[in-house]
Image (cartoon, rainbow, N blue to C red; front, side):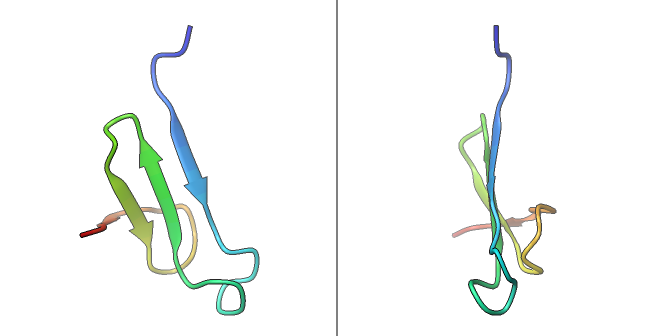
Length: 45
């Protein structure tokens, strides 16, 4: 039984294939990491 989830997407090569990483969890709020990693702290508007 699953009680939570998180999905992440990051560029394969930061600066070449993308600039930001994106995360979503069971709250449904999409956040991004401006550095291209999985430290998603910036809320998308």
